[in-house]
Image (cartoon, rainbow, N blue to C red):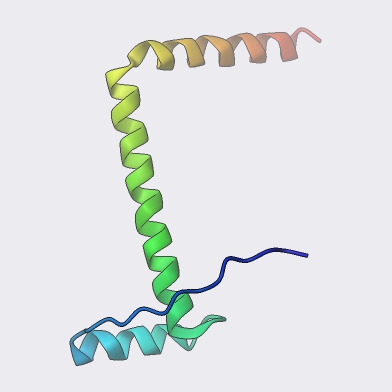
Length: 81
């Protein structure tokens, strides 16, 4: 059985047009408006993580070079079998 963390209730204030859009989009997915907003927050967190990942790799270029070398070696090993 999948264990889910308990949900937390949150009150937010939005312009009426934004609230209407959230409700409209929430109708289309399981879980309604709450699930829609949760997905938006998760997508935002993922974008931030990818951005930070890219920043880290730009600051540590030797890992990119090493990764490319390992990928090339793996392809070569696969090709020779």
